[in-house]
Amino acid sequence: MSISPDIERPRIAASRRLWPVLAIAAGAVLACAMGARAWSHWLAQPLMVKACSTARGEQSEVQLDDGSRLWLDGATRLEVRYYPTRREVTLFDGQVLFAVQEDAARPFQVRAGPLRATVTGARFAVRHAPDAAHHEQVHVAVEQGRVRVDNVTAKSADHAVQLTAGQQVWGTAHGVSAVSLLAGADVAPWRW
Image (cartoon, rainbow, N blue to C red; front, side, top):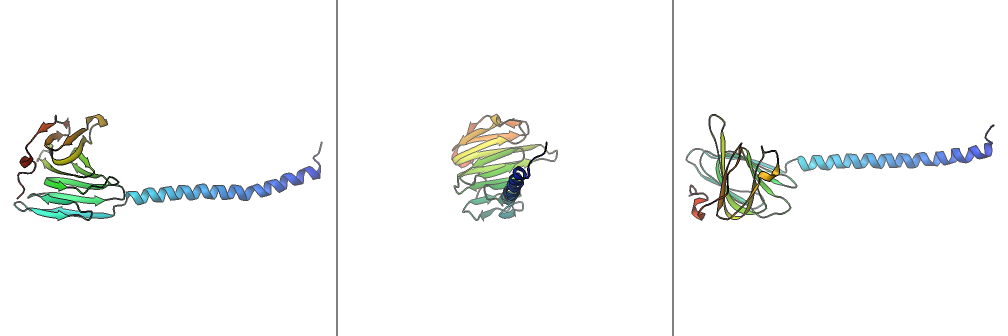
């Protein structure tokens, strides 16, 4: 049995009209995938990088682009990186008092050894004291606002604690201590 030429022609014509539609759809999918990848790459690139350090016995005040202020004690090293969706500080060693400008769209994170302190706006101090044997002890004390502290080496997020003014925690690679109270003057007693 053969197909009549009158039936075959509409199928071929419909097929010829379908190919451009399929090509446009494939191009749109490809463009969306490339756009998503470019957006992801853009979010991963820092908008600003700033390294700060002080010598032993020296203290320094640093004003950041967003209005946040840092007071570094002696023998302190840190790096600030601002991304489109977050602000990050890596405290390698030393101690810093942070006065973070509030920005709910870009949380401010301080990474010090095994701990991460996250705020949207607060005034708090972090002390990171690694020793020669690479035992890291981190102290976080809050003067004003709220600070979420979690252990980045922990397997689950239920090790996080929420600190408010007048509270402090200590942390190591093994976990975070219980929250304890402190006087406001004890948040950063080293500050001049």
